[in-house]
Structure formats: structure tokens, C-alpha cells
Length: 213
Picture (spheres, rainbow, N blue to C red):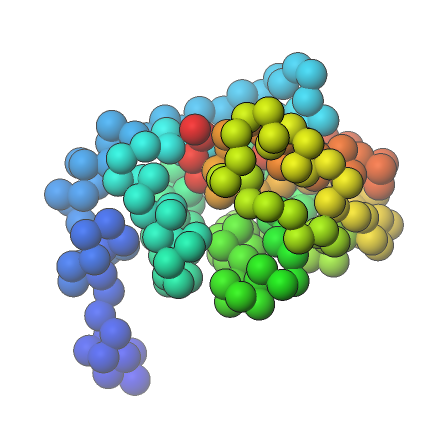
């Protein structure tokens, strides 16, 4: 069965999408090196979260891949981004500081239209591989606001206000929480999510994103 499935759906490189035994070919691995940062900041001031980490600069090939993954009906790319994160020992050590991972939610109308929440797919894979609890029943988006990517920096400050709500807060009380999102630009989205989650009397809150703009 395994060989048959591989024949029908062979592994491809997540960047060039040519048939490859790994999730990325050697040629593309070398190409994305210039965008790789793997930066972990353990002390964050003036934010509702304590720690922040990301793996890429949001530019070039990485920017194109994230846009394709997020907006061009390419949910399969979650495997590529998940593997990139899970192969980075610095990021894995960072993730292991937390008890629960929560992907930034999207509104149900947007999820229905897109077919998936791009952050949720990656968070599920991280949860499964590192045996960290995934929690999808706490943070909800109850306002279908404009996408942050369509707004300028000033508009982004107010676009995320009061769009998230907290439910079942007892599920995360006294836990260390990791919020996962795809891109960090101004930080308004993850900061607002962190503010809501703090109402559940959690311990530390960290943030992880694929890229930072």
C-alpha cells in the first residue's frame, strides 16, 4: 500500500515541487538559507506575550510560498512548513517550553471560503510530532474583519481590537501557552490573542510564526 501511494502521490520538494525523497531538495535548501533566521527572543517588553520565535524573514521565495499556502488553495504546503520548523533544534527546544499550542483562529466564514486554517494545519502537525497538546476550543474569532495584509500599519492597530473571544478558559488555566501564526508584521494579531488568553490566568505566553516581516 505504501509503495502504491508513493507511486500515485510521490513526495515533492516544498519549494520547487519537483519529485524528491525529502520535503525539500538540496538545491532549494541552499536557496532558502538566506531567508532563514531561527531567532528566539526570550524576553519581550510592552507586549502581552513573554517570548517570540520565528524561522524565516518574510521575503523572496518564502514570501511567495506563504502567500501560495495561505491564499491559493495549497493546504498541502503545511507539511513543508511543519518539517522546516521541526528540523530546527533551536525552535524545537523553544516549543518544548509550552504545555499547549493554540493556532490563531480565523472566522468561520473565512475558513469555509478558504477550506482550511493555515495556522491550524501546522500547529496540529507540531502538536502530534512533539506531543504538545493542541487546543482549538479556547480562542475564537467572532468578527470577520478585514485581512491584516490588506491594511496599512496604522489601520492594523485597530483592526484586531475586540475580534477574539475566550471560551472554556479552565482548559488552559495555569498552563504555558504557545500561540502559532503564519506571519508576524506589526504583532497586533498575536498581541491581541495573548491579551485575551491572559484572562484565563495562564503562566507564560509565547508566540511562534513561520516568518517575520
